[in-house]
Length: 511
Image (cartoon, rainbow, N blue to C red; front, side):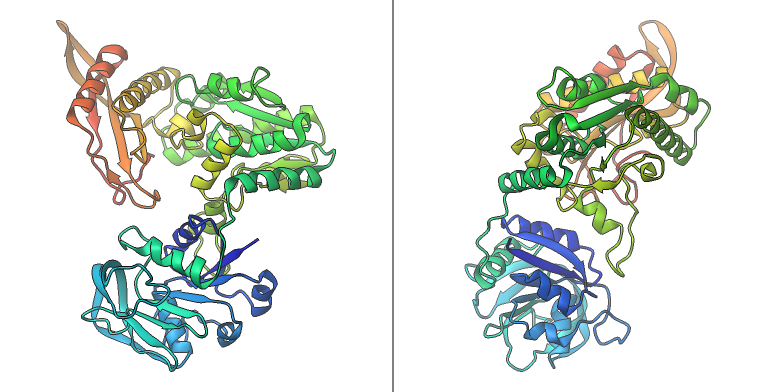
């Protein structure tokens, strides 16, 4: 399989570079910059991309690479810090820039080499640097500049070495996708055979060979990751797979029944499906608890206990399935990269379930690729494109204590909100939207009577990566209609608020 390796030097956009390469239908993995030359040779990639990073390349403590990498004959593209690293290692000069560049910058293309093929003479790019290449190494020619950056891009076509000071992977770089496509297809010579149909077919075959006649257990949440993982296993081994779906009573309206309709005995997939209706058990455990982190821990721990109980009824299991996806792997730390957060889709289960091996069939896929795989597998669009939903469910969309009454309130309000967003045709353009129940009660008037009821908060954000987000500017007519319906149709609510906070300073979820 054709592979491009992204070597991570601490850049915040490492995942994004890999995603952009995969959008060119070329398989790509992120690896730590400490990867050895021998390991690289073993992979035999068609190309290598150096990421950006926060360091100064002339600082001895900064991440560097073996000079031998430039003699492998493998095309290399350096981005931002990666471009400076290439220049510095090969004898050029890198120093503190007299003027730092940050944000949208017009770059002048001096020579339309392979990277800049079909790119405009002047193109808007995203710059983010305080150091710059003041002199290109011997054998390189400068191919682009800005008024304050003499080497915005450089190239040594003979050795297939290219460097750009800006970030082609971000949307702000107008023709960035074209540049990355030129590198991947025209410099590296990749044909572009990385497609979801071939991934699905290959994965099913490999799972069948690996599992043989073994027994497989999967914790099914109904979310897109666990659903796609379950269907892949179902297609591979059928009734050897048992899926345990724990309905903790904190799902959205009708969601438990929707999951059962797809994966249960009357659904289209061949597997053993166990639904555990544990709603009251969770309400009892959460009684009186108001602190968000404590709620999360209770919900997670109770899930593990229930799953363990069901697993013991089944007996010895050979394989445990987890819906881990590639961002989980990267965010849990690559080599010396910072750990953003540790991920375990079913945290703690390996200690309490008797099994031989973990299977993570989606481990190398990004979220958008998981959705494509889901469509290839024939999973209903409604499930594949469902709104992101946190593991603790509505437990963290209810501020304060969780009760059955409050769950019902937020389920109904959220259902109305999502229904009206879809009717207005806004559902495809939003990153995430939901209703949450605040802990605020206020005086209102309904008919001729005084009320003292809860306030619902509506949240809608626009985001491409969920690392940052902006509050969506929904049409006032939609907000007004949603407000009227919630106040009139949901008992216990007399006020509706709209959250205008971005991320940062807020988070997408309330707790």
